[in-house]
Image (cartoon, rainbow, N blue to C red; front, side, top):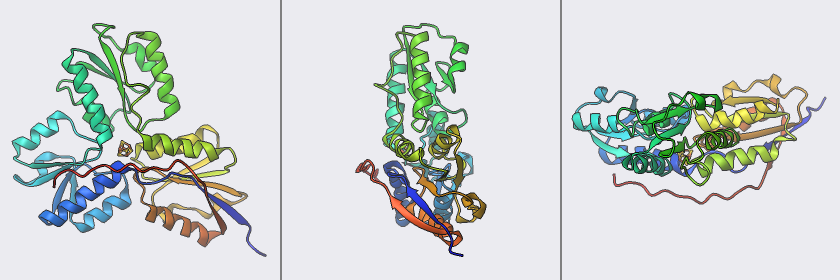
Length: 311
Ligand code: SF4
């Protein structure tokens, strides 16, 4: 009996964004220039495959500045760091190389602008995510900053002056949820200042739009990305919310043959830190389990390139 053919519909754009490309290049170029090992504060991007490759080349990832030998170079991850981490690096006489995505730096600049003008700031984001810690940590005590994860957090906020209040957002949030939180914020604090729409980056937006455009006919959604990748989790949630069987995978080994039983339309995408090489190996694994036809969809063309810092 011939095996049935499953359509693997590839969302576009998918995979690497400009901030991730830049951050990986910074680590590789630093290893080339200064020789291994090169210390990186936190996983430079949240993808296991990328991290393992960089470890093999000589990168050492740590969350603790005090584990890095004095006078070493230290790379700050794409998620950005708090002022405290920058200060600690100085104390340990480390030589920082900044791989913070320029779109995260833009949010830090917004925060610093508001702080300098004596505003309190609400950050919409996920507690504990390194980008959120870095952005909240633009203010040493975080006394003028409040974290809001969902609409119900808004009523817990006690601000000093409703007219001197602003909001910023994490760059990798769900577009729909963030829009709802922002409109609630505007209802509660009508004079709140903020970015034109939100701080969600182009890559997060384009990847969510590409999945949403193809989701209606999908019976299975596979998102290539690691568990700690915020934007990849948000892509998987798009499927979950529509009750479509959805998986987040970062290794071909995680693909199970039973996922494809009685399915014909599979939508496959990759989060902003998932390399195309890994996406290909996942497609190969699916092809080893069943007959597939690959359909590549047109999507927004991304031609953003971020300049490297001086290394
Ligand atoms: S996902 Fe967005 S903010 Fe994060 S590194 Fe990529 S471009 Fe920058």
